[in-house]
Structures are given as C-alpha cells and as structure tokens.
Amino acid sequence: MASRMSDPGSTVPAGTRLLPADAEGLAAAAAILRGGGLVAFPTETVYGLGGDATDPAAVAAIYAAKARPSFNPLIAHVPDLATAQREGAFNDEALRLAEAFWPGPLTLVVPASPTIRVCDLARAGLASVALRVPESGVARALLSAFGRPLAGPSANRSGQVSPTRAAHVREDLDGRIAAILDGGDTAVGVESTVVACLDGPARLLRPGGVTRDRLRAVLGYDPAGPAAADAEAPAGPGLLASHYAPKARVRLDATRVEPGEAVLLFGAVPPEGWETARASVNLSPAGDTTQAAARLFGALRDLDATGVGTIAVAPIPRQGLGEAIRDRLQRAAAPR
Ligand code: TXA
Ligand code: MG
Image (tube, rainbow, N blue to C red; front, side):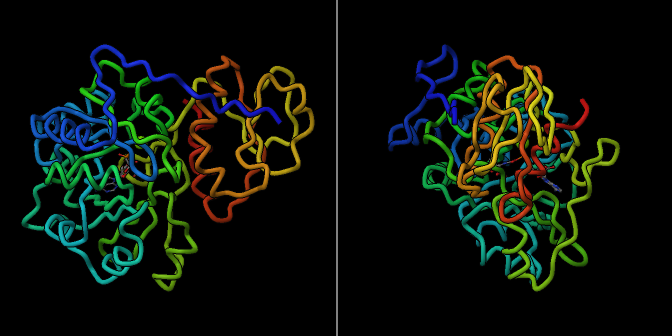
C-alpha cells in the first residue's frame, strides 16, 4: 500500500532559525523567549508556538503569527502540578486528573487563581485558565530553562492542520517566528484532551491524547461533551467547526473512492476503488488508533501536497484515540 510519509529536508529558512534540541539550542530558545520572542517547540502531542504567557506583548505576537482570532484563549504550559496550582484553583476532580495524567496530553481548564501570572490576553479575558504539564523531554527542558509559564497553541496558521514535525511548522510560520526547536516527530500526534473543571462535573471540551475511557476510570463517570461541531456556537471558545483543515475537501466514512480522489486508509480492508486513487496513505494497516493518531496530521499534509481536490477517508472506529481522530477529521470536513 503506498505510503507517502515523505522525509523533508532540513534547509534552514532565512529569518526563522532551526535550533537543535541540545543544551545550546535550548539555551538559545529560552533566551529568545525571555526577550519576548516566539519559539516553536515539540511536545508529545504536536508542536506548540511558544511565547511568554506572562507577557501580553509576546502573547499578542502569537495571535498575530497564527492569524488567530483573539477570542481564542491559549494553553499555558508549566513544569509541574505545584506550579499549575499557582496559576489556577484545582478542585478535587482537577487534582485527581492532574495526578493521574500529568505529565501528559491533558489540559485542564480551571478558575484563575489570585496569584496567576498568565496574562489576561492569553486567557482571552476569561476568568479561567487552561493549564498543561507536557511529558516530552524537550518541552520539559525548555520549561525549566525558561522558568515561566509558556503559552503554546499549536504552531500552525489558525484553522490549518497542526504540525507534528519541525518542517510542518516551517511550512506555516517561516519568517513569522524567531526559531523552531527541532525535536523530530511528535509521539502522540493529536492535541491534548481538554477538560474543564469549573462548577459542577468535569466536562470534555476537546477529545485528545487521553482517551475518554481513561478519564472515566479516574472520574468514575463519563464526562459530558464535547458539543457537536457547530460553527455558530463553538463548545469552547476555540472549538470552531472548521479547523485542522487541509486545502482539499475532506469526505468522511468513504466506502468507495471516486475517480481522482486521494484516500486516507485505515485497517486491512480498503474501500472500493482505492487502487486507482491519486494518492493514498494508510494511517494504520493493523487498525491501531494510537498509531493512526501519530500519523494523522502528517498524512493530511502529504495528501494535500499532491494538489488533489478531495481526500476520501475510510471509516475509523471511535474506540481509543479514534474519538480524537474523528473529531479532527470532522472539523477538517466541515464547511468553510
Ligand atoms: O496538545 C496541545 O494541547 C497543543 C500543544 C502545543 O500543547 N496545544 C494546543 O493548543 O492544541 P491550542 O491553542 O491549539 O488549543 C487550545 C484549546 C483551544 O480549543 C482553546 O479554545 C481551549 O483549549 N481553551 C484554552 N483556554 C480555555 C479556557 N479558558 N476555556 C475553555 N477553553 C479553553
Ligand atoms: Mg490548534
């Protein structure tokens, strides 16, 4: 089965520096951040567009670089739960989730605490704050070198597919940010699960790297949400229906591939007509949703790069990371 997970070269663009994830690169990245500059950095989920979360000017620069609507609040990355508790107020459920899944692909939305340093602009003026303790070694090293909360939306232009390797960041943000810290391919491949722990029971705002089953095991119930993708009434401030979108049209749950389409395959049984597809990538021939998540965004970018008009997507089960994969694909397929 054709696999087109291309290996891009490593030419350094003018303007945006590509930094290796070694001691020197990390020190250079931390210095840029302390000076109010922007550095894209790898996490275990996707690359983040890092800027000083305590500095409104740096946060404004993030919104500008992404061309992101300023009503969409950012995640602040911190090194540990103790630091997170300086920024936000953790109720019992938030504490249990943090203890179970941090460091890792979980973001908790909690009320801002009186000692918060994350600035208003990073929170889009909300009374809550989104906090995450990443697991990736490079992200952790950067947080420790920088020493402040690091704002980090995914390092793509707003509405585009999230980046899972340094070359993807460069495609979107070359010349718009100071540097990219290159940590290779990310492990999880889809963004963190976002859970709100505010008043009442915990709510799932965005499915992601921590599956619903794992949340249920800790909470003792299935969290409500996310709301159906609806452009008029986003579930979270940033959860617009059309998001993660390639240029090509995306057609879901395809049981046959039409002439001229590219196809995103999953599992051992391809849809009818796949042999004549313009291009194809199998996210996981073995039908493993964890492997599929890790390859999803790279595959969408690779198929999109062929210039095809439509990407047909084979049915993907909801189990495990399938919920997050289906959520991203639904947004990619939403009318724009
Ligand atoms: O895996 C990830 O979460 C990546 C890596 C870099 O950490 N980051 C990421 O950030 O995906 P971003 O900005 O693309 O997504 C953050 C999501 C958005 O949907 C935003 O609306 C939501 O979290 N969010 C942030 N603060 C919120 C708040 N106070 N209330 C509700 N939703 C919030
Ligand atoms: Mg994003």
